Length: 193
Image (tube, rainbow, N blue to C red):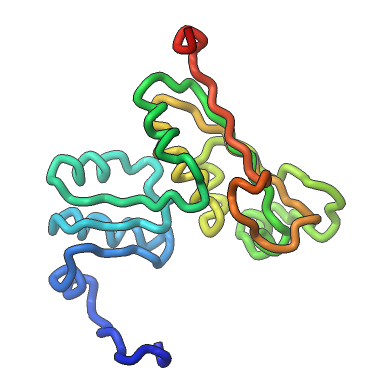
């Protein structure tokens, strides 16, 4: 903050809500249950960057829609998320997301530490977790916004299966759409006729 021309005020969350029309959460998944209900109670629009914290919180989304509060979820690294959302107006049975992550992005993840995964011993891309988006988002809260955003865009009826692969050949995070993450969506055959 020392490089700013003027220092922004440091205020309580209650004061922040009084001063703001739009609140941007950029804290963590743990902070979202504190921030979002307060924003909704005061009918403030909110941008949630820690998207994984929204999984299973459909009531918040409904409340925001009913009271006309803006509720914004960034698309993150997903090109075409609007197309997925549009497709979800029909029937989507399931989708799968496979995401390769560099070892450095996974090294300090609680899940990796708890499971004693020896990342430095991997010689090829290895699936270290696969399952529903909510499970993956709990395991990797700092790196799972793509899975969370896709889960929300698909709607509640579709199942999203996520695979996280640790990749010893990747040296730094790379943008989605570079072939390192893939999404496949399955719709009923009758819809293609």
